[in-house]
Length: 370
Image (cartoon, rainbow, N blue to C red; front, top):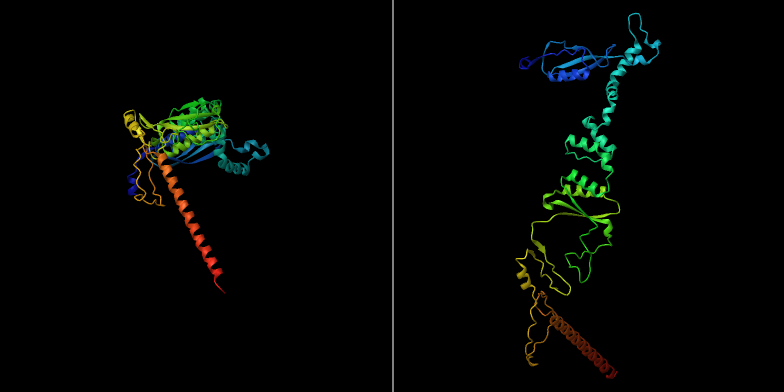
């Protein structure tokens, strides 16, 4: 009782003669809840409130439940007159049984009365908009507001007329990502591996034959670091779904900063230093430093030949060296080849000497008397 004393009171509105939908709004505005909607046979317009409980003007607690009786003709009207007859006290078993069925199917009848609104994206219930999108094969983002979902479904047929075109791809990408992409047709960022033209590490990717007439590049005006992984996957899915099936595409994001350029670190016939020239330089300020670093120095002068007694015996162990620009690579290769040949000659001579010793030993064994 103490809890009820703290609850607020409100006046029960008059619902008699009001359509059921309007009566629900009046009850909700008064802070009450409709607990049950019951049917009663009457000739008033369908779903008109005939009786209410609590009665009008009665003071009730906020949150109490309200029951209303509305007019219905009943399913018995669709049966022959024989089944509509009542007994001497006015009871009709068939009518009462059909009222039970009508209570169970009442919500279905209400939806059928406004069935046309379910096929209009702007009038359909919120939960039915997703169904309309599936019927039109239109994918909706769960994060979109309801108004945007209704507008997209309404324009579904119009959007289908531009699918597979540059305009359609731009529209779908802008709708789902919020970015206005740039699409470059008949272009491919890589030319493949071509000796004397491409640079290894820059555009020397080995690719299957590419037809430029069936290629395009999609540029998203955002840095890759600013785009989530889910958004990147979504962009790929949209492009795959909207592009022509035979076309190939390349997705490119906004480059980091300005003035940065990637230098070729291996160019056939120009620079072949392993591990040299891989730096990322900022603009033309470091051009002089790059030129100085990659400048090929003249080969060193040969030292005077030493006497044979002072010469060191060449070793057979090769030491791993780092190749740098400015060293005579050809001289190093020749020296390694000469050392290798000398080592092989020494091995051959040693093998021959061992064979001669074995032959001499066999001949001595044969000469010994038995």
